[in-house]
Image 1 (spheres, rainbow, N blue to C red):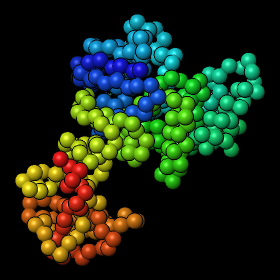
Image 2 (image 1 turned 90 degrees about the horizontal axis):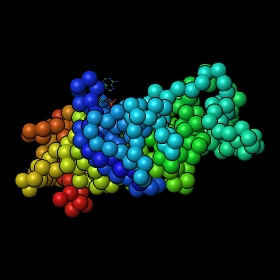
Image 3 (image 1 turned 180 degrees about the vertical axis):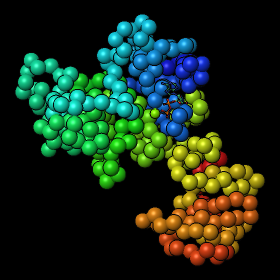
Image 4 (image 1 turned 90 degrees about the vertical axis):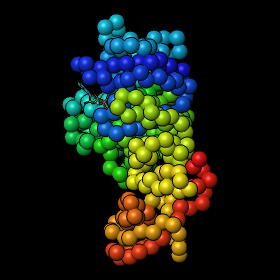
Length: 314
Ligand code: ADP
Ligand code: MG
C-alpha cells in the first residue's frame, strides 16, 4: 500500500504541498481533484520521487520513496508516471514507442503485448505511424499505453485525457479504467474533470492550495460537499438556505413548482443538448437550475429542492 505521511514541499520558498497525508490500499483507484494550481501535479511528482521532500515521508509497502538527492535516477521501478506534458520519441513508430521499455528477448510476446496495449487505447490502426505525425490526443493515448507496458504496481496519471476529444474520451476512459481494475494496478489520477471521477474512483481527494481539504467516496463528496469549492468542481452549484441551513444544490436537484418559498426571476436559458440550464435571480442570489424547456426572461417562477437531496444532505 502507498502511504504519504505529512509531506511538505515548496518551490523557491512558495509552499506548494502543505502537510499532506493519505494512504491507498493495493489495487485501489484514487482521484485527486482541485482547481488549477492547487498542487495536483506537484503531489504526483513527489510520490514518484522527482523532487526532494522538505518534510514527511512516502512509502510503498516498506520501500521509502526518495527524491533526486538520494535516488540519483529519479523515479521508482514499481511505479509509472504519466506527466501532464508527456513526451514521445517523435521519429519512431507508435508501436516502437509503446514497446520502448519492453524486453526484446521474446519478440512474439513483445508484439502481442504492444498489440494488447494499443487495443486498450484504441490506437491499433496507427501502430506503424511515426509519433511525430500524430495529433495531440493520439500522442496522449500512445503515452498512456507506454506507461502501462511494464505493468507497474502503481500508476500515477496526470490529466491523462486532457488532449483527447470528448467523443473518444468516454470509451477510452471505460476501456482504460477497466483494464487497470482487472490488472489490479493501484492508480492515482489527477484531474480537473469530474466525469473522470464519479464513475470510477474508489476514493476522491479534494485539493486546495496545497492541502487535502476533503476525502471520501465519489458519492459522498458529490452529495455532501463540505464547501462550495468542492461542490463547484462538479459544475454550477447553488448555495440555498433551507430551514435556516445552507445547502449546496446542483442545478439538476431543483424543479419548478406551483408555489414555494424560493421565488426567482428568469435571466437566461442556456441550451445544453439534453436540457436547458436556466439562470435566474432570487431575492439575494443567482440560482441555476435545469429545465426541459427554454423559459422567457423576466418570467417569475417558484423552485423546490427535490426531496431525496434533502434527505441525503445532512
Ligand atoms: P496543478 O497541477 O493542480 O495545476 P501544480 O502542482 O502544477 O498544480 O502547481 C502548484 C503550485 O506550484 C502552483 O502555484 C504553481 O504555480 C507552482 N509551481 C508548479 N511548478 C512549479 C515550478 N516548476 N516552479 C515554481 N513554481 C511551480
Ligand atoms: Mg497539473
